[in-house]
Image (cartoon, rainbow, N blue to C red; front, side, top):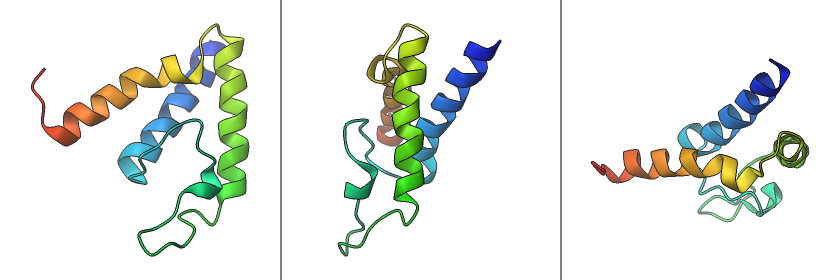
Length: 87
């Protein structure tokens, strides 16, 4: 039960970055490096988001996956939706 809950939180966080915050998210990019089109920091809360992301790397590892493998289906679904792909 705990594993499912922790991984659900990771999934929701990644989905939020893509669907709500509209970020071209990649786990290796430091949150502080995301900027607006004007060049300002995209996330004033970048330190908190970075701490969460760092913890999510460990959560995924704890349950035998990695954040890249775990996030891939989320990225695929997002791209499919955004590009209106039928396959």
